[in-house]
Length: 241
Image (tube, rainbow, N blue to C red; front, side, top):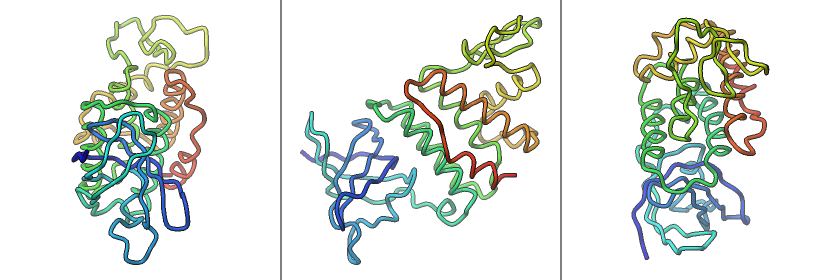
């Protein structure tokens, strides 16, 4: 049976000389794997450049329940990216976010709120001419809301630490190393609560961004099963320095 779906590309794996298996987070079926034949041939209707990290798609797919690999009838980029593929910093940010997303939602079932957040945020990032160096930090903190471990931003005046393990402010120093001092904690919460359109108003130095990124990845590791180590942020940090 054919279904119209929207999709977000998360991983493409070579299957044969001309075919690939693409893992796509779809609005209707959640994470799915699709076999695409002939994608590497010169006259292929579906080309490899349509299947890059976090590309946004309109698809017509065959779907069979309890089948590990599905098939695609039609596929087209929608919207077509205007800046991400042509800007080394934007494409590096997207590769980094793609790695975190893949580690976080690889078993994800359909979730309209999660799908719409990722889809709209990436589309906005592509449309926005300026490269906001806070985007990836804000994106990840906002994403945690949809993954079920959003930081609790409520704080009393005596609470001067943010406990990353508990996800909330604390008045006493936590007994473990995973916490933020108040100044960094307030930036952490600002990145969570400020709309993407206004995150440029959050003034951070490059060293603050690197520090907060490391702590956000610790936060994900603490709250996501089998998250593991993220590699691509090291390249990103170099580009954004």
